[in-house]
Image 1 (tube, rainbow, N blue to C red):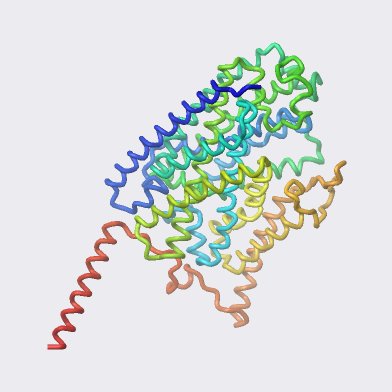
Image 2 (image 1 turned 90 degrees about the horizontal axis):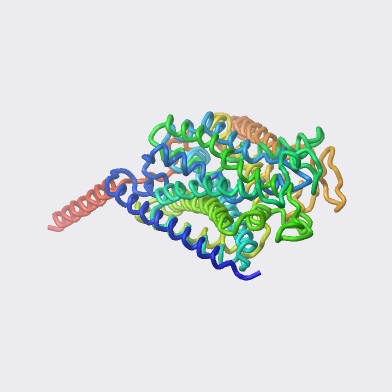
Length: 557
């Protein structure tokens, strides 16, 4: 197959539109900086907390409906061993938004936090918070790698070019406009990207459904035509695994800084909750086209298409079924629109992950730990350098391996098991926990997840679970919702060890428990000063030194 030059041109036009929007938004960011009397770094990180509701709805939805979500919805429905009943993504994202609005919007906004790490540093101090920060930053970088890797594989299939150039160009565009405008650029480009996703995929659906190679999807849902019915089957013994997959996204999403960055960028709690509730409706709607495309792919006689035989599933290309379907069941120019929609989905998540990771590195690591006297300009410089470094690392990982699932396992699975207990305790059980319990729960969750293993990333299965099924390849298929079990065990360990530490401390058997809430002499969170405060501080210092010099001269005389 020859290189698809028309497709490359259409992608180039799309990138130019996104980059132009990012540059325009960066100018808006500069205007807001000049008007703002508060912290300049908050303009970059949370948009000065004055993002409009409709923009916040677009950016929240676009962040969650990324390339991985779009591709996985179609893949699960098409896969004959899964089917629609296993497509937990759309309902899980809706639940995630609702849970966030009901339980986490008010706590994170009540003290004007900027990142999810702020409450950890307030409660546990810098050392413990830095350890807890490790899986969060790794998850963001691997999230970037996963999404860029998915895009690279897609472009490679449709354009017949190596995946590396697509990964590099996409990363470069996202890095440039994120560097220029921070959250404003990310949010306003999300508006364009979400529009592309919504219109582009729905535009392709009628062409796919009316393809002569594809049978009626309502018939194929319950009848074996070219493969098993795409509706799928959920056995009673698999219910635990299904619940685990659902909660992985529904509850695990509260651990991402990208979520809190959006609810903190709005003026009021009510607006933040409205953003979450509307996003809870939009996320499943944006997943419907992918589900339909997956169903159509399962209803297609691939031997009658330009793809030929054997089918994509038999060739191990289920993960790329959406772009394959666009290419072989749609007219040429229609498929370009669909590819643009998929590219938009990828870009909307990459820029959010970049800003998420860099905000925490700039504020929580550099400002609060490394150099507490850092000025606003220094913080912004560190944030921008972090955007560049995180983008390069994510792109490098995406080019190094094609295993998007490897990144997904580490970024979503492990984060859910290890961080959900920490986030839950810091917001709702804060008075009963301390840094001893937090460290114990963290280590226990990490140990249990490592012992259960993950064959897809070469992690051996050391700890067998009840009711495991041994597959033909010798690996265990876990029926127990083990991720959720680890999460609950970790919460119990945090509470238990925290109470034990208090009991030992009261009896003089353990060093006195102190944190930023119980010991007022400890300052873990370095105060971020405004430009006015910085100038006042410099003026006072100069006056102090001048007065001191005058006194010394008087004494000499």
